[in-house]
Image (cartoon, rainbow, N blue to C red):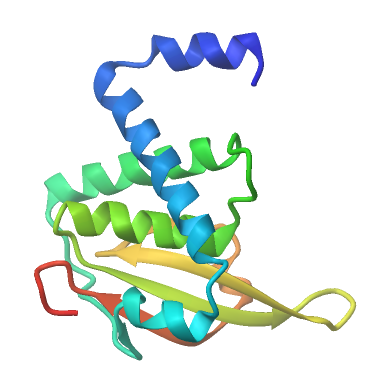
Length: 152
């Protein structure tokens, strides 16, 4: 981390700094989860093949954007690899803490050489919290609805 980045970090207001710290912790937690076989991880992601509502309150939309920005900014500076599935799982956990529903999508596509590639993204209400930049290239192969209010 450069001196410039450290200065920027300390220039943040307390609330944003705490959100960045939370994103850092959950990105690390999600990265550790990736060591488990997916079959053991999947049940914790929510209800398979279901989606949550595309409706969301204005207050939640503002919070979703803040969480999305924090995950994107922090993921670029972790000591470990924080790719799409790690960001989606971390975001899902951050939303779950706030009792906000979300849907995690897994998709596949072929790259320029014809090899199979995968991507994960997270949606809450109408907003894509992570992974929206390339999701249109992928075909959804699985989805997990996380209903944060006790009904997963």
